[in-house]
Length: 392
Image (cartoon, rainbow, N blue to C red; front, side, top):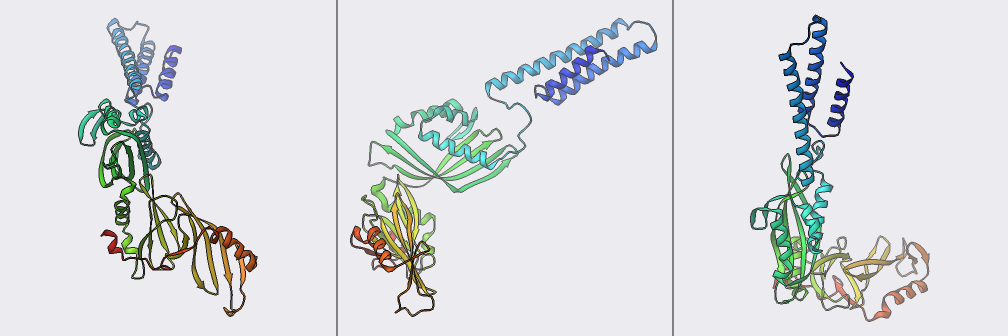
């Protein structure tokens, strides 16, 4: 084999390793180069006669054809790469990757709220088989729909929150998956009489290049904003089947924990071990928190005193604070009797550090009682109503 043929083989190998040519093109090129070498070797070993003119022309034609095919293949690959319609390199054997698929969905929902049309365009496939109720459209058509949305519906703000626990992915074929996820979606619109808060079941079809080839929504519920808090709470309770969590001693009531005009919905299960759910509304979606089944609170101050009563010789109480829909424990106070009579003075602890009754009283006053008159709620109060009345 000549130096020129060796160099051509090395160059061919380099282009194959870089993904510039396919395996079939590589094998064809190797065969052509080695075939030419074999012909030259046979002719030199057989005799000293020159290679017939006709045979030499055939070899030259084969090599020329291979070079032309390789050049054409490289041109098509580079051309398609520039158009963003193919992936260079080997097939994505890890498809579908859960993290990448969920990231596509979250980036999509965020880009819609931010009117980031560049990101949206990068997430869609060049051909979109379904966009809502439109079928077989190109990417430009779909992006145009997104661009016209705000003006069409007189919207000046959009908000989205994906419920990650609802994420479901199923393979459709070797190169496609379907994704279903629940989205809490709200819009700020000029006409307050129209619906602006939605719970959507979003459906996606995503290909192996992690492009969206299909997307549409099923509407689970809708309301006209926070003024329609009853329907928002009702939809949430129904979706999460919270009726089944409540026994005959439990129920629901509205209370005002923070300073706004939207009440919180308390659902006391009636079981000390499972406590009470405190539901609130922020940006049109329900935020869920948790405390004891019975508790006291200071209206509109966010202050909560909860506990489960005396159990196994001790009474554990929690000084809690409610803000932005979440309940945070500030201090844990333990009244410990052990095997002593309850008429005796117990041992006192704050966050597991032993202290005295005077210090405990100061904490209770500074972080709870000084903010107003406590009101009992949940199973400690008298305002719980049966769950069936939530729908009336």
